[in-house]
Structure formats: structure tokens, C-alpha cells
Image 1 (tube, one colour):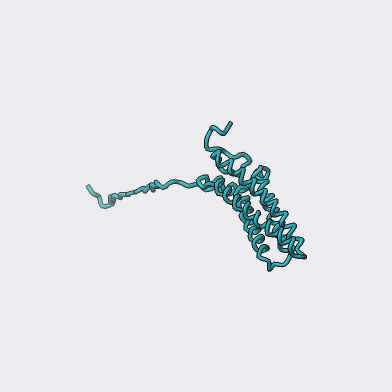
Image 2 (cartoon, helix red, strand yellow; image 1 turned 45 degrees about the vertical axis):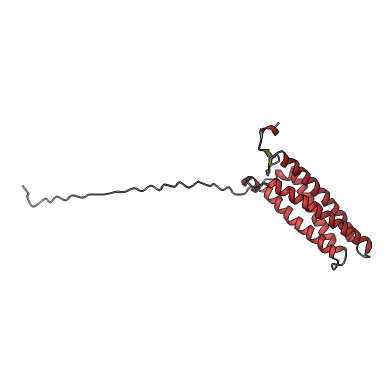
Amino acid sequence: MSDGRYTTTQTTVETREYYAYDDRPTVQLEMPKFDGGYVRSLGGILKIICIILCLLCFLCVLIGGPGHYGGAGWATFVATVGLSITTTLLALYIFHIVDASPQIPWILIEMIYCFIWTIFFFIAACVLGVAATRYSGTAGWGAASFFALGAMCTYGFDAYLKFLGWKRDEIASGGAHPESRTAAYNV
């Protein structure tokens, strides 16, 4: 009964859907955010005082006397490295980068750093004090020795506070109130 006027065609459409299976862990990164609250905490205030004292010590060493004296080079090294590391640590705390990596023992690292810089500033202050009394025209080294003693006391106090926090098993935090790993200290 085919008439010739009509033709029949059959069309088959195949569709395939692919689903990507991803079993990798998802990591969500947050952009660093500025929070000035840390500057008003005791740790932030101590860091700012250390930065100011390092800068003043560095400037007094540069202005205070001849640069050929070896003690001036040591004091310059201590002040500039202390200035850069403390400024970096302040930025890490202000932008909450320490909060993003709690697996790093920040308090222990800072305690060791502050203790070492306490000793370094003690040596620099003694060397500059002796040089200021021994040589003429080095009054700036006397002032640098004073600022180095101030930085030594500030770094020493910060090392003591970090030691107490380390003994209490605290976690470093960029906020004003550090958290604790154990509930016993959250009284």
C-alpha cells in the first residue's frame, strides 16, 4: 500500500551525559582582611613599641658616630633585622594570616625569636655604651644604647608573655583575644 507519494524515515537520537566525579578535597581560600583590633591588644602594642625602638636605635647608630667601628655594624644588623621581622609579624597578625595557618606553632616561633633578640639587643647595648664612653664624637651611640636597652626589655617581656601562652597551649590569633586549645584555660 505504498503510494509513492509518502516516504517513511526513521531517525534515532542518542544522547550521553557525563558527570565529573571529583573526590579531591575542596580548599577554600580567604583573602586576607585588615583588622586593626590586634594593634590595640597587648601583643600588638609590644610589636609597635619594638618597631619604634628598633628604628630609633638604627637611626642613632647611623647618625651617632663613625661607621668603621665593628660594634656599630652589629647594632645596625640587630636593629634592621629586628625591625623587618617584627614588622612582618605585625602584618601577619593584622591581616589574620596566622589564623589561616594554625598548624604552624606561631607562639613558639615568636618566643624563640623574642628571646634571641633580647640577647642580641643586650650585646648591642653593651657594645654601644662602651663605645660611646670610649670614643669622642659618638654621643648618638649613647642614645642608641639607651634605645637598645629599651628594645631588649620589650623583647624580653614579649618573650615572657609568649612563654606563658605556650605553656597554656594557646593558639596565636590576630584578634584581641587568643583562643586556647583546651577548655580548662577558658575560665
